[in-house]
Image (tube, rainbow, N blue to C red; front, side):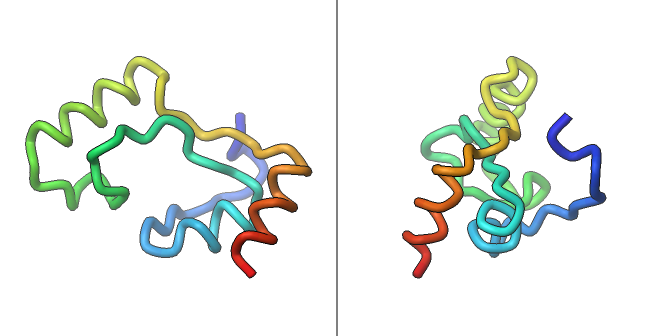
Length: 78
């Protein structure tokens, strides 16, 4: 699995830097129209159901970025 080596706590507020840039891990398939935030903070029932559905279906999942993707992404943050 992606997160077997370290115990990583998800930081939704600074995800782009604290997880994606630092560890080269991305969350692929987060549903459009659903604000990227801690799931328990989602107050819209339809959005929460949509997120739950894509997670259950495996359409939203953690994935390692390639070395090239990591470099390009880190360059974008500069």
